[in-house]
Length: 127
View 1 (tube, rainbow, N blue to C red):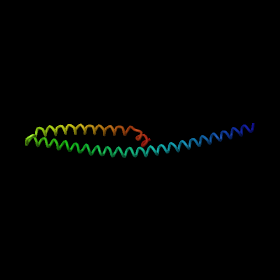
View 2 (view 1 turned 180 degrees about the vertical axis):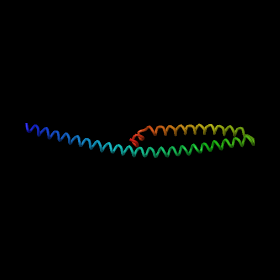
View 3 (view 1 turned 180 degrees about the horizontal axis):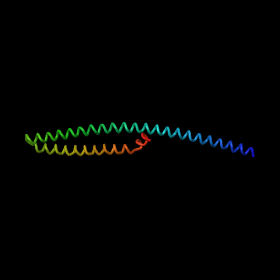
View 4 (view 1 turned 90 degrees about the vertical axis):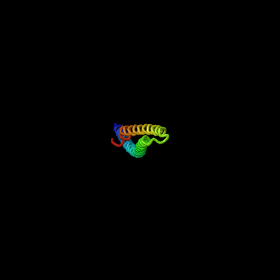
């Protein structure tokens, strides 16, 4: 009976050691995954910021173009040079196209902002 207690004690110690090893290994893997997640999210956030800045610049340029075209239309209407109606039609088409682009860019920006607050990166950055 003494040997069976010794054997059970050895088995219990081995199982305890195996559990400790498994726990430590799992903790290391979790830590590594968290670090990888933070690195990934930092890269994604950096790239998203650059894209949004570029979209903002393009949107601003389009707004300026719309204002310029609107001013040109006013000038053409007041001076009425030969062919001005054709030029006004072209400018109105450009204004319509640019306004649609601005609207699309605004939708894109809103979507990016909404999605970024509901993503994996949000949960990794703020556990």
